[in-house]
Amino acid sequence: MGLARHVVCAMSGGVDSSVCALLLKRRGFNVTGVFMKNWDSLDESGVCSTERDCEDAHRVCQTLDIPFHQVSYVKEYWHDVFSNLLKEYERGRTPNPDILCNKHIKFNHFHKYAIHTLGADAMATGHYARTSQEDEEVFQQAHIAPPTTLFRNRFEIRNPVRLYKGADLQKDQTFFLSQISQDALRQTMFPLAGLTKEFVKKIAAEAGLHHVLKKKESMGICFIGERNFENFILEYLEPKPGNFVSIEDGRVMGTHKGWFTLTLGQRARIGGQRDAWFVVDKDIATGDVFVAPTTNHPALFRDTVRTDRFHWLTVDPPAELAKTQMMECHFRFIHQMPLTPCTVTLNMDGSVWISLSQPVRALTPGQFAVLYKGDECLGSGKIIQLGPSATDTCAPASPGGHPTSQSWQLWITQLC
Image (cartoon, rainbow, N blue to C red; front, side):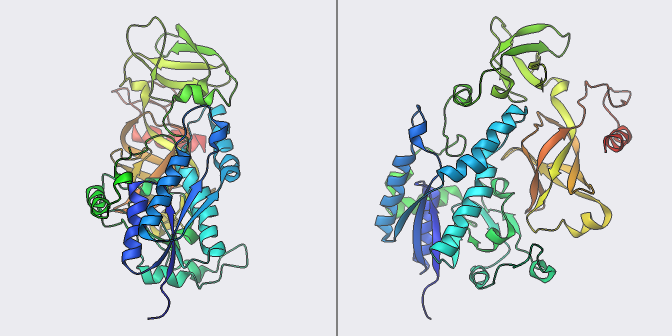
């Protein structure tokens, strides 16, 4: 049969990546586990679990009898992810560092390290996702020379690898993979593709990996963890106090420490207010943060967004969209939020307008608009502009007070 294929598995110290490595080992691959350190705990006053996670990953590799490596991407994470995050917050946006981390770190720097430095035939991660290719096709990619020119030979991408939802729809992580490159996708295996989280836990238990089973699942910002966000961000950005202003009558309701500590849709902590108020808009020129008195206030609902240049996982936009500039599909901008039917319009600069079938609460600039066609994740684009809310007067309204579909098209045309 020849030498076993060499697969480098990204190890986080959690149950998913541990079972990922275990399954690869059982299938006869030559597996190497690598732990990535992306955040320097010495810079933090808060509790950081990086060292413990590394020890857990090392322990799993010892149990599986596979080589273990550590690699540091602290500088790369700071430059490619965290500095971008700070700039976005200062612009009044709310970025998604987990998507950026996968794009710039795991499926870029780590991918190159696995293939070129460690000489792997493929890399693997514990994401709940699947692709259109079989394992043997993944290994064939290792022997395809990278393009030597800026532009790819069109034949290279006539059969692009596609990204599909994992079998466990509750845990599907294609949302977080929506910005990765076609090159990385071609050389990545997702051993958990057809498994549920409960079954993964069962495999871990039967293999005696109890120390990773006991760990609480991480739900915080990628590599920063669960801590008070306002306190954390104010360690890096100077406070810029401003007013909370009622969207209904312009009254000043209270003060905040900086618009970047707040995101659209969240409850605003306003001293002296008995009722809950929610953030509906921000003006970074004045520092005003506009708030509304109910969680489902009309000012929070919009049904149109514009992205920056859209990242198609297959490199080119779908044929239907390229041909007609319009396409029906589904949208989400938060992981696990229900998919919303939408119409996508392709602009000349590669950006897209997304018109939703119904208004969605707290659409947020800086977040990623991720598109799906059936089970396929098509890719994503960063939201840079919102259409008007039901309370805005810039678009003509129907008798019910909500903009009509015709007025949306007119409004978009005027903006473009």
